[in-house]
Image (cartoon, rainbow, N blue to C red; front, side):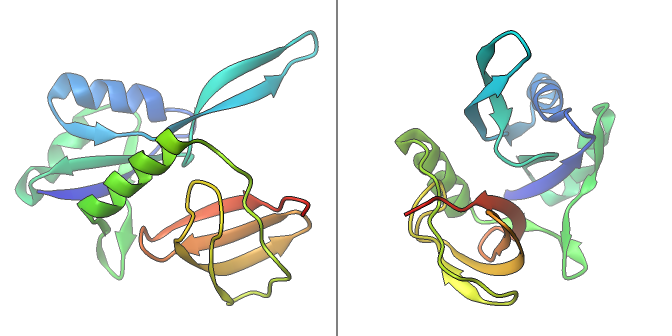
Length: 155
């Protein structure tokens, strides 16, 4: 069985993961705690690490079963085929989330640069810089085939 990446409707990751579990489909929606600011208070909330993505593990011939779940849009494709994520990558991601969060430190970057992240959830992961906007850097994690936006820390 392979791990595949599902693309979901915006802000439906948790609901999709819950409904997939009810269907008996093994899934993983990595969550992180963030502090959100409202006009009258701050609150810790659990948010998906990857917006609009849920990982599912199932045999290839059963891939269509996920479309029974409202909120599932499509599979993520890489080079014309459904993106397959190695089980070791999922296990590594789970381990990194248990270790806790640190801001990612990056130096001067240019589009197309290949970097190795030195801290944070993806420490040790190789990534290609896609876009740099002020303190935010969008990179493609080569091992996962996903884009993530990182915030540069002051160091």
